[in-house]
Image (cartoon, rainbow, N blue to C red; front, side, top):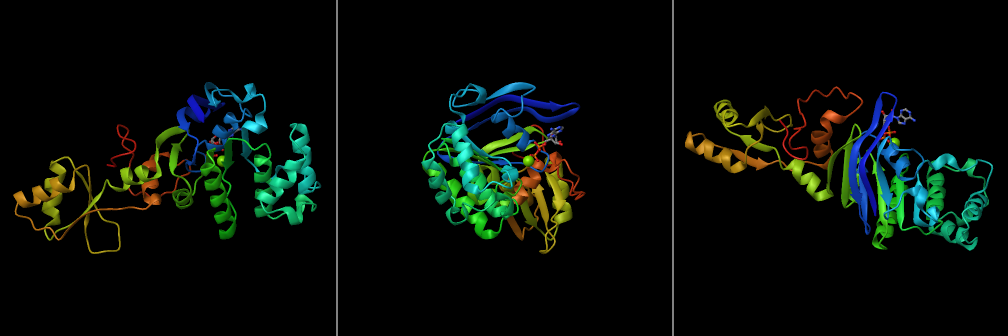
Length: 320
Ligand code: ADP
Ligand code: MG
């Protein structure tokens, strides 16, 4: 279990992590999701005691990283796949790591086998592909057989086979009852990998929810409406507090309505003698949910100008 409370990190004027609180539970894969620059790596470094919080704290099984008696047996992490010394072989890198952490030497061959590097164990790490480096980094994380695992953007730059392998590995580790926190800015990947999400933007918590809840909360918000009298209907719905925009999709002209229910739209139309040709909740993808929810929190400007804004009073909910 990982518990962050009011975690804050400032670098000079930059607030990298801003009053962040969340819980990561054992037995499941939790996705740590946010656009680039959101503060994911900084948070992970603070979990691992590599960065000191400006405020708040983060505990692993009730203790700070620095208080752990056997850090590598408690929490394993892959932060940067390329940190092994390039002239060391995979095996000697892991043996050194094992020795400096009082872990049995026999565990080295076990983890090499686990990550599928046995056949290249004596080759120098500097010659490894990115995928092999990721596997070596994961072997290091697993060396102490820890109950808590952190992976920072582990699928970056991997081919589909490598991505699938990492996904199955993480799910397997969670199925063994371990706490698995994996960061990504790739939503489609998280949708397939994580059952829970901690979503951040600009260092702040945007949502902590199951993946299904997160998608439903955002994607269930807009309702697609087609009517031959859409102009009149739009005026009536807006007067009722709805937000109405033209559907940007490829289909026939339609309205996208948020802030009212499908029932309210149907009743308003009926009361005013307006025919409806379509009234359907719009089931968005995780990408759409993410864009709606984090729209204001993307650090780099995408310049999409789609007019969506996060509602401060209901961060997981309505767009306006
Ligand atoms: P993510 O991993 O989500 O992409 P980071 O945690 O790397 O985000 O960065 C969050 C913010 O903190 C960014 O604005 C980044 O520029 C800033 N930042 C990260 N590390 C440092 C540092 N060592 N010094 C100054 N600013 C930093
Ligand atoms: Mg990062």
